[in-house]
Image 1 (spheres, rainbow, N blue to C red):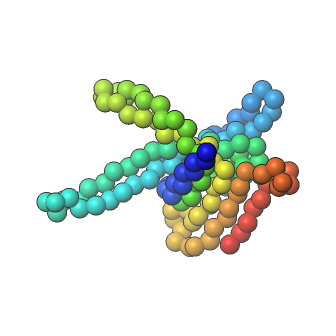
Image 2: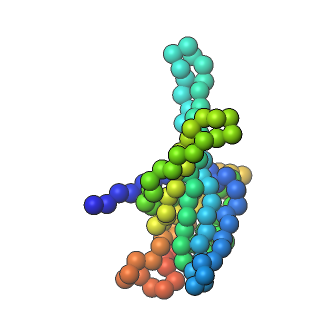
Image 3: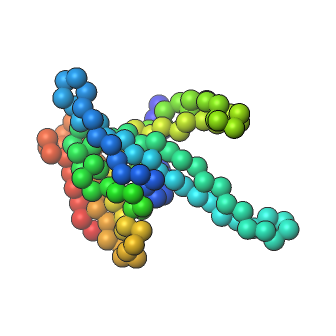
Length: 135
């Protein structure tokens, strides 16, 4: 069995990199995805969903270096089982966590360019430095 999740959104805060006890780099960052629509009464509506993204090894180092708050990114990875929690206002929500296998760095919020860079988690057949492609 296999599942894959793709997220296109803006980074909410600069990434945080840490290391496991054996020295493996791990980077986490949040991504907001938004949907806008007009309801039946003609009022604009918007819903934002926040995702916590985790990257490992070389991909963790690359995302920590290049991803910044406000950047547009495309994340492809595996969705962990959502974890329910109760917010401060008493409502129940779910934490959505994705372990990324690929992160495509799209244009920063301040730029309208179409440049993109992709970083992928190395496969067993890839070299030790991972893969970086510039479009």
